[in-house]
Image 1 (cartoon, rainbow over the protein chains, first blue to last red):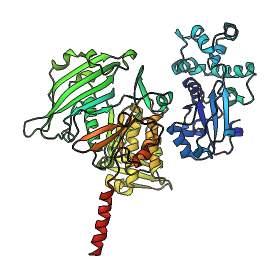
Image 2 (spheres, each protein chain N blue to C red; image 1 turned 180 degrees about the vertical axis):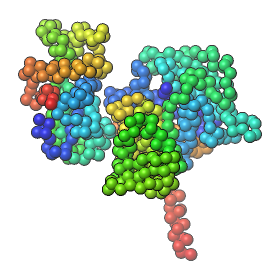
Image 3 (tube, rainbow over the protein chains, first blue to last red; image 1 turned 135 degrees about the horizontal axis):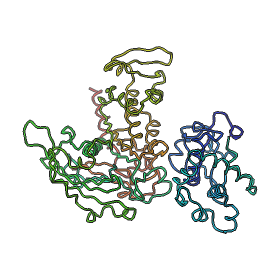
Image 4 (cartoon, one colour; image 1 turned 30 degrees about the horizontal axis):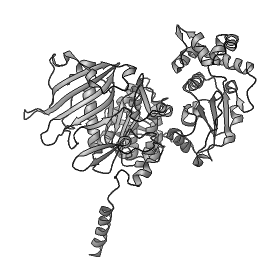
Length: 187
Length: 385
């Protein structure tokens, strides 16, 4: 899949995560070698927490690499379009930007893991608020923090994360045409 | 331990209340929290990078020496006379704010030369140490010193008077910073550099050393240490050569030697979370390498322990990789050396090109045009003779 998304074999991926929690999830998957790419395939060898390409750190890394890249955006809806700085248009192209969505919010993965999907649907709460009031791990209630995700899906619980991503794809068929699933990036 | 602010009086040619601040004063965006700042406690942020720019003889190195002196006090509780050269018999006074282990500390001291003729000691006088437990609600009030309590034991226990009372705080050597001067002698000290690898690379596979060498000299695969004064160079064509440290210095290019040395200290800094001070960061290096070095400190994947890079430079283009302006100081020397903060003194949007502002001479840092022309005309006149 990853190779199919690459234009050239020597290209790299730019991974932009909408939030720090999405970044934590991708980092966990990378560290456990569950994805179809590894850090050496990434621009800057890292996953970025950024919605747009504005920060000099990302811009400099792209300039340094100076070859066309494939961009994966990770978040929920991602309705805003990436604005590509004019001098980077040879490196970044709109048709090489792909959205990987987890809707309505990333917390849906935790909800799936806890078998609380039906209760969540009935609650009419946001996934974030529902998780805060219904999910605990090792005595700690869910809080929107990378620490929680790292502990929740760390160690052997990586298998839960992989299963949750697959289950999310199986049960959320209503993605728009341009919205891909994180499960597509699993090995 | 993390330095938050220094106010110095009487240090060399620095002006009164010479201040270096590591705490952001401008707004903090989510982007800044990702790349530009470290959150060392809940809501307490410090800079990941701090740049000091100015023309020649504007006091950049002096500023680094002051920082080095302060870090010496924090790490080994002493001041070296080499770096401590004050002006006009005025005592140096330091007012240092730092964070350590959940507390904010304010340390105030005078530094005076020992009057004994043969002594090279610098003495601590009138020392005071105050502290306050840090809480998130204090994040915007950390300079309200009236709320700090003086630590009662500070002046009661006997210590040699050339040892700071900060010894009582940590009691063991700690390493809040590494100072990398522009002096080449530091780079020649290969044995000290190899000690770094013994510390950080206990399996001694030296893979990281090889990766450093590869950046600077593609012909060399590795350098092994044979004994105190002999090294073995291994080339990529599988040949090797045994050399003394002096020969090694002559064989390697100056860029490789400095790169090997500097990047080794960077490695320590990033692993331990020690700040690094680099005078004239552009010295010997390609601009893209310098940018890469600075960006390592903005990258939380490698800078996990909140190390800060503090550097001086003449190259304003380097500042374009800064997304803030409050972590940029412009050093100037008229009657005294003074620092201007780019945010406080020249408010403009951080996303605008800083280098363009320098070339426009917004900060009054351009090299004097008439001096350059005078030199050129001098050459022409000399040639006419």
